Amino acid sequence: MQHKSKSQSRARVVMGALLLVLALSVTACAAPFTAPKKLADYLYYMEYTDYVPDLTTGENVKMGFACSAVRNGNFYGRNLDLDYADVPEFVIKVAAKEGRYASIGMAAILTLKSNQVDKVSEADLLALPNMTFDGINENGVAMNSNVAPAVDLDFATLLSTNYGKPRIHSMAVVRYVLDHAKSAAHGVELLKNMDIYGGYGTWWGLHWMLSDEKETYIIECIDGELVARNDTDNIMTNFYVNYAPKTLYAKHIAQTGQKVAGKIYEGFPILTPHACGVERYAILKAHYEEGGKSADGMAHLMERVKYTQSYEADTNPFWYTEYTEGNLTIAHSPMDFKADIQSSIETYKLHDRNINPNNFWQTWHTSVYDLANKTLRLNIQEDYSKHYDFKLD
Image: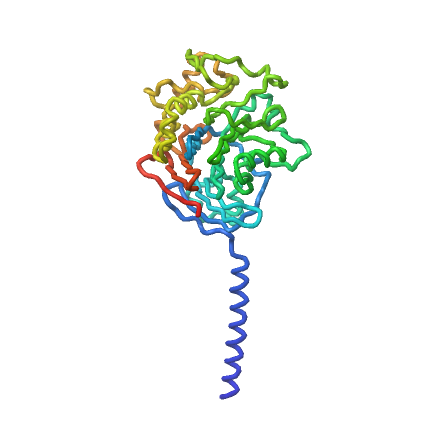
């Protein structure tokens, strides 16, 4: 009887040791992120203690998007405009570690459906921070990416900005800057020491707005060079803000004073032939002051340019430059694409998320970053009746 008791005791010790080893193994292999927490339809929240950086992020992304961004005072507003698809977005908070600043921002796995979030692979979730569209870090450095028409620069903007330096795909730029920038100016210097390549979709390049409490830069890749200016309107939609008149591609740049649907936009950056978002830029410029008053004010300013307004009959002025696919340019008359506009309106009326790739577009999210307090105020899927607040501790 005593022998049996000793055997049971030894068995319990061995079993306990095995369970301890198993527990330690599970802990050691635990994913460095929290499980996605659903906040609303198409919106989830995750926290990361670590992730796997990938500077080639974006090489396989073949979609296009519009987008608007503006900074006034402490407030930085951004709309992400994409097709009306069943894709969830993620608010991601990434913790600081040696060589990396803490940040919070918006990301998405563009191939993921909203009903698949609980089935997505650990590898995809671990890579998610690389697809950050906009965000702010612990130093109050905020950044976002918008598209710009690479076709107007013979696609050279997609090839290289600094041959021989470490390569980074344009889609990885926002994440790279949030991780490493002490200030907006420091972010510019970081990017000047990288070789930026690639774009978004078939004929779009990317450009970026980068801000801290002191200044704002519009950053673009032109003629194999990174060009950054901090003397702009602090507004960015989908046309080049910087202009390089002596480059090989200057012949593609139209002259100032161009007409868009019969209207001359004065005081604008020089418009390239496939300039997109001219009307949105004008609205943001006309109502710029309200964006500097409060986070609510900036959110209201961004609501003025929510994308589904382009399908509303009373939109004034009509958003002519949202329809520049194919050979259409800002020099064409509205009659040239009346059928395309009507097709978009009819698709919009269906409100079907599964029509890709011919779906209508909407504003997926409106982010308002407070540069002083490192906060994010978020509206999702053009619902401006409620918002979500996040703070970067």
